[in-house]
Length: 158
Image (cartoon, rainbow, N blue to C red):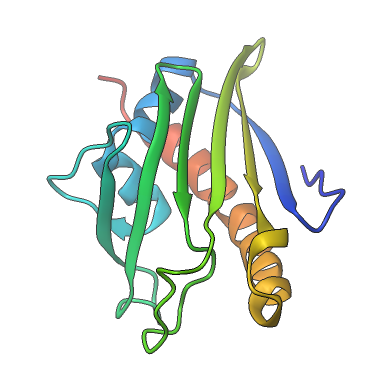
């Protein structure tokens, strides 16, 4: 469900047929997050204030390192991180660019869990790459919603 209304933020949401605790584990456990998101995060953990890096495992992007700074973690409610959107040119140093904020919000609903994702801050990204980053991340979040949906549906409960 695409709810984009501005050039600064991407908003998407999906109802997952899984308990909120299960969806939370898929988001907050770094290894599980990496499994559905497409990043090698074996042995990594997410904690507020921590920088997490991992090799991207999507075909064609394996040469890239995924890097986020975890902002907030509210168990079974909210996970947020900052990153450099669509930072795919390994010859470019993105470290001086502003980051976008990605927020995952979980709400229990009758059918399972409503997962809402908002990525904001695109208006601060350098003009020469802002539109492409927004476009690529828009389609990226659509794909990731399908990925987490398959992941929590297939996962055994533990």
